[in-house]
Each structure stands twice: as C-alpha cells, then as structure tokens.
Image 1 (spheres, rainbow, N blue to C red):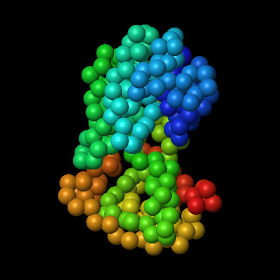
Image 2: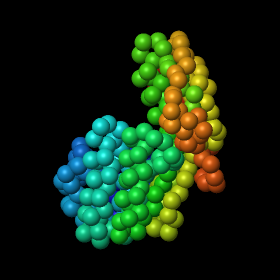
Image 3: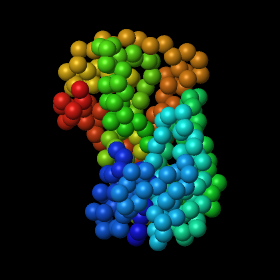
Length: 251
C-alpha cells in the first residue's frame, strides 16, 4: 500500500515510517520540513500533492503550544478533507489515552481532534497511547535545569514509543476495522518514582520537590486519568529499563 505519515520526521513518526517500510509498503514522510513532501496542517499547503495516490494516512503530528488547536483540530479537518479528495481509504490518528478526562488545554484539544476524526467520512482508527518514555525524560530534563525537579502527585503509565509505533504500523496495514485501540506501558508509577528513576539513570543530582496540583486537574492526575483503566495492549519495556539503556543521553 501507499501510506502517508504526517509528522513522519518526529519521535513517533519516523519509527512508524521505518516499520511500515520494513513491511514492504511505499511510505511518504510528511512534515513542514520534509524534503520531498512538505505540508502545513495549519494552512493545508502541500496536502493535495502529498496524499495523491495514497491508500492510508497516519496522523502522527503533534503540537503542545498555544496553537495546538490550529494544528490538531483544524488541521485534522483539512487533512481529512484532502484525504477524501485523494481517495484515501483509511485515516489513522495517534492520540492520548484518557485525554477526555484531563481538564487541561492540550488534552482538551486532543479530545476535539478525536471527535473530528470520528465525525469525518473517511474510515478511521484512533490509536490512543499513554505518555512516551521519551516525553517523561524530556519533561524531567527540562525542569531540572536549576537542580530542582517539581514533582506533582500524579501517576503515569509510560510506554516505549517504539512499541506504540508497532501498534500504529499494524493499524495502518490492517485496515479500518479496529475503531479505537489503546496501548499503555507495563506498569503504573507515580511521578515521584519516575523522577527518581530518571535522576539515577541520568546521574543528575536534582532535588525532588513536591508540587501541589489543586482542583480538577490534580484530582484527574492523582486518580490515574492518563493510565489504562480497561483491557488493551500493554508494552513490555518499563521506564526504568528504557532509561537504563539511554545512559548519558538522558542528561
């Protein structure tokens, strides 16, 4: 099949590209800076050319800034319209498990993106994943610049992005018969425990400081809104195993 990967140069997207090519599919990597298929979801520029002749579109794009809705919601509608025009038979959207349960701007946008996909006319699959190991490590590294890591009372169930990529690639190759698919990491851990694991693996002498999260957001994260509550796919690599394999790359 001919498969287009939007966000095909990102952390997840490039792994999906690699896995689908290994399966023998013709794959196009789409992004703003892609050398062959540059696209802009906020304007729709390049989508027509990039999707021409494609059977499947995988949307692995992301935007956590203030313009997230322009990319992930409005951009999704542009992508779906362009896909319909091009005759795309299957739209695969990568989303966040539990996004509809967390009262924070980014997660609300991801929930709106899911709704846009489900309401579209192109047959779809939504792959909902928990936080990537890479995301947890990047978050720790960013806040530890001054030797202090604020630690909210919250629980995550992080998963290896490579394992998510395998699920996304399978969804793209199998066809639009799966609806919503969920993948989470092998274990639920508090942010405090994840911070200790990162600090040890990165060899960073950062001080862990409790950070109160009041209100609905705090209740959601303490209650496991971003963890898997029901059956679904489970990754095998724990955050500790992943972090231990990264070594100095975590610093």
